[in-house]
Length: 165
Image (cartoon, rainbow, N blue to C red; front, side, top):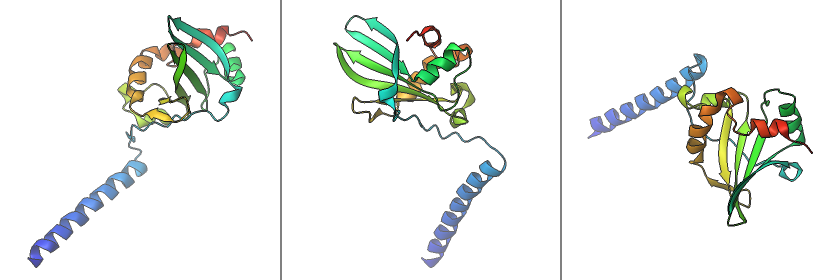
């Protein structure tokens, strides 16, 4: 009996050491992390965002918002920098039902396998109280935005650049 416990303890110790080695080696050797986390957050300064585009589809509507600083950068033709957050308000039957946030930060693309990356952008859905509504939405957003590499993975680049206050 005692021999089995010792073998089980040794197997558990070996497994734990294997995990520790893998984690340590990934940091030491620069192996990419593929955590596939979703880091996008709702902007704390959303009350300062301005509407730059509306997409009407009958009783369904999307309202795109950004900061004035983001709009100025886009208008100048520059790529949006890390720290940028874009918000899309979702309306159904003329009622706000939630938000989607697209947020860019340095190195965030490394959270995903290369074929799934959308630059350093992450995506998240929020409810009308600005709380995370569903964490699985990132895959849906990434699958569409992945086709927009030439526009920094955005569909609204033209509207950002054309914005007039």
